[in-house]
Length: 83
Image 1 (cartoon, rainbow, N blue to C red):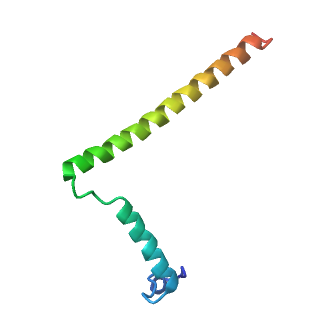
Image 2: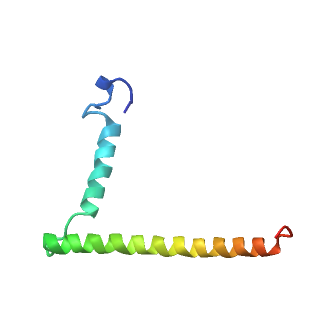
Image 3: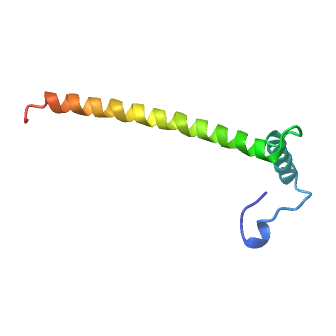
C-alpha cells in the first residue's frame, strides 16, 4: 500500500497488504460488537460506564501528580534563602 497522489490513496482489492489490513480491522470490529443478549440501551450504558471509569482513573492520577508537584514546590520555596 503506497501513499501518494490521490489516485494512489485507494489501494487495489488484490493488494495483500490491503487484505491484511481489512482482516485486522474486521477483528477489531468483531471484538467490540454488541452482544446479542444486550439491548442497545444496555450496550450504550456499558460503554459509557467503561469510559467514565477510565476518565475517573485519569483524573485521580492527575490530582495525585498535582498534589505531589505542589508539595515539592512548597518544600523548595521553604528551603530557598531569598525568602
